[in-house]
Image 1: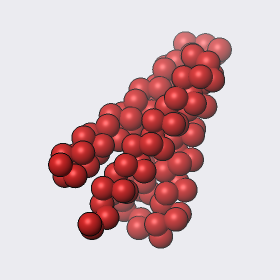
Image 2: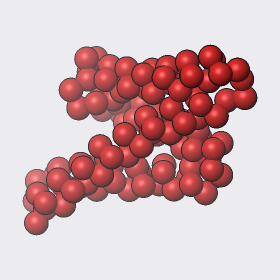
Image 3: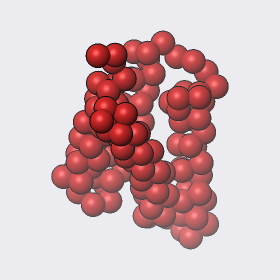
Length: 115
């Protein structure tokens, strides 16, 4: 049972990561600027977020951070996603994204402990 809960939580974390990338693209597109800058931002923001995640935040990150620093990076990454969502759709949804990440990350860590 613990394994299936952990697998479901990991899937949810992955979907939340993808959501932050989509939110970044939408946020870039919503900037009040000319079409070329909006298009560039809609592409560049998720690419930058993905690059940062790949280097520092992912389980197979290129740079291995100590666990507290890695958790801090992941928290900052999702808070940034929540802030972009709050700018697009209001603070309630932005806060809900961050809360969903925090609860899911806690569940993943709790199910990783041996009984």
